[in-house]
Length: 55
Image (cartoon, rainbow, N blue to C red; front, side, top):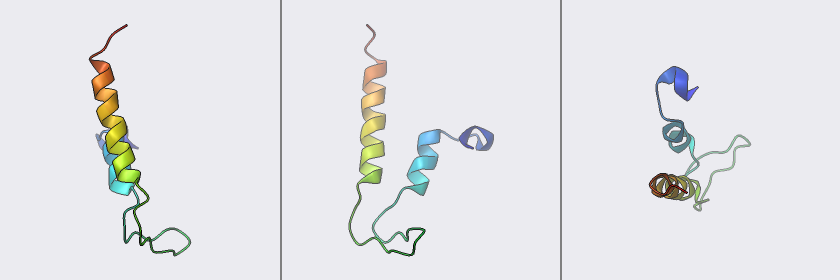
């Protein structure tokens, strides 16, 4: 999907990530962070750092 839209896959994941106030498919409103955005952002940071390290 990201490729068809000309977007980075991580950008789509961040757009669709659950946040406080998000409504889940079963109708539950999230009142606490589930750390999805933070996890994606950390993974991106670590991935970019690793790109600079070649074995």
